[in-house]
Image (cartoon, rainbow, N blue to C red):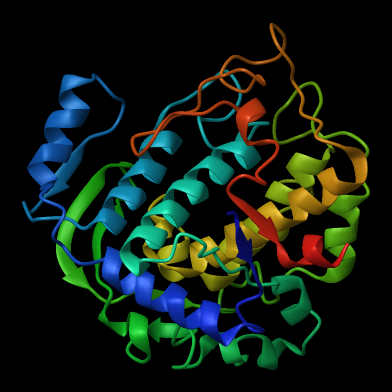
Length: 319
């Protein structure tokens, strides 16, 4: 049975399960140490290295590492997770694997990741946006500074990305940090009108497949007149949501679940369309390209176009 992905600000039961699952996955009991990550990178000749202290990591930390790893693999367009057509299917696969791990630790095979409808909050006043219920102890804690209240106050950041070198750093555990609305480039969240612009794009993606094209994927990723939509949420939250280690903040998954929901609404309207197809377009981004995975079976974009065997969104149940 597929789980249902619901709005975290509407379903308190899903909220509580999500927070409980995040804390459970963040326990450093995986049996994997920073030295094991270093050996994995070295033995596979991957374009990333790790420095810092040796410490046991959590399953949650391995998801953080996975995201940075995919970003470190350059393709002819963008990288293995961003700035090209692969952006939406790669993150769909990534979140499916996190959802499966949450189902396991929660003992609930029907659990679905919640989403945060940030465009609804984007309709609020500037001051109310970072003071909404989401940023309270009942949800995911402080919007600014260290997260010290609520269930995820116990979560710890162990892997960070050095802004200068791009290296992964295993650091002494510390609380999650945020700086919502303080970046002078981005004072507000995206709006519903901006989401409509993404939904009204006729093409999923098109040549030259990069950050310059106007397409559903690129508008939703947020490069067009950016940072917008997905990118804007990362910049607006700031702190640990800024670098490639942004999954350190559970807000990452609420953001990406909403991005995935918008993509699904678009497909509900136009069909399960994905470009580029086979034997055309940039390698690594084609419909049959094997996506970078270190947890679970690696999938292709074609295999995730219909997610109904894994989950449905609440809006689909009302259709």
